[in-house]
Length: 590
Image 1 (cartoon, rainbow, N blue to C red):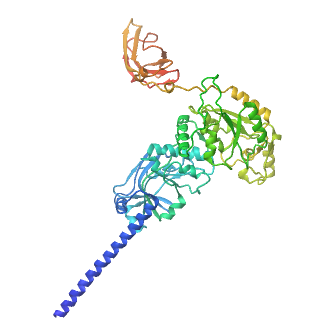
Image 2 (cartoon, rainbow, N blue to C red):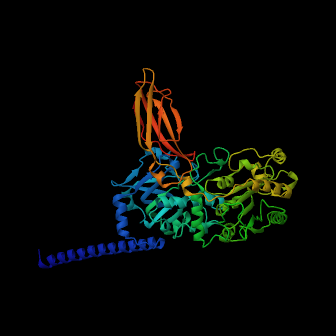
Image 3 (tube, one colour):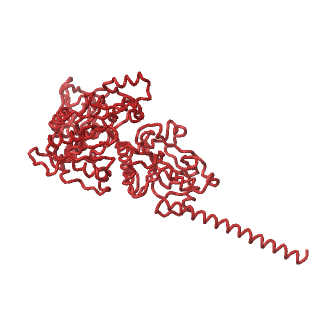
């Protein structure tokens, strides 16, 4: 081999090595440029810093991780690390690796019917959440993900056009879900996946977080694959008090877990975020009937301008002013900002309104205020009670009065309107006549019952004499609002050191003495009445004998048999209905 050939071969090898190194450097530079671009996109979403390379490596190596609370899809909320969303497929994606975690690991039960509810409305088939599954290795063949570094709460708004639904189904549940789960609730980001546009009340959603909420449609703007570094999915249902009639006719929930205390705390926080201070006189003390009236007591009337009108609103306002010798002001969702309405309502003595979503603002009323709800002709107040239920929650301290139009000549119907505003022109003539002749809407399921819609969208001429009569009777029955001491709502702890002693008197007679010490927290409380409940059960029997006692020891002889084992439970009761827990069971042998 000649020297020239050798040099040529060596030169080719060097050039090839340089070209290979250049291509690798170019490839690395392109990857770096892409990572920088994806990092910039991630930081467009948030001011939080993210190391894109570290986040991508974590997703590729560890995949998605999920841990949930709750046994059923209706009470489940899940935390995810690195859950992704493919905007092209409109699906969430769980990437599996050897390090992935999925608790509970339900297998196919995850589809019976869903992993969880995305909304606080229970078990509604349009609100279910689930995800697709892929191996983490498939990330190599997919678009580079954009990472969302914020802690996010992902949910569905149920009906963001309706103020009642906004508060009851979205804001209250989201507020307390964030309190329960999120690391820093005010810095968390809300992501709404139901697909609605912002809606007329979007500013209220913005109050829950310092971060701008994201809509489903906006996710497309940030790339084909978005990955949430830490997210919570689902809403707590503990704050809801009403069900809308999807399975049975609407009414209060069977097991209400929220009280007025939690709702008033939420209202106070929202007012602070809207820079509203409660109007003077709003926190009036009504503990004494002889107290002077606050200087500026007033009544608020909610005015509607399109549907469900009060046709003689001016006459109604004059009658209220004369009857109660108070100033009467009107508010309107169509004409005023929501904060300005809350400012007025927060100091009112009475709120008067036709049945409708605007009455959810009664949660901003001061304690002791009166809520007056007007119902159109043929609409039974006992069948549609979301605001009555709210007013009656313990701790809301609102007095509720319903009035119903019973005179058909005082109603104006609108049969030619669209069906969603009560129109019935699209129905068969026979059904139209049947609806027109009806005097009472029968109980029904949600949501398109034509008779209900026809009647609820009527306009009403309020009969002033009957209205004032109902109001006078209702106000007369209004209980005095007393500032309740906190101790009057606190429950006792366990009784301490429970003991039993037995003695046999004869072959047929025995005595059982049970004693205990007071609950530990009782020595710090002033309680009007303290009693103790004792249950005695013969071992092996299914029934027990209960006793209510005023003292801390007692000797039982009736029905106590010699040479028998008895199980004994003891607990404390404050003020007749505040029950404490039972102490550990005693086993007493005579």
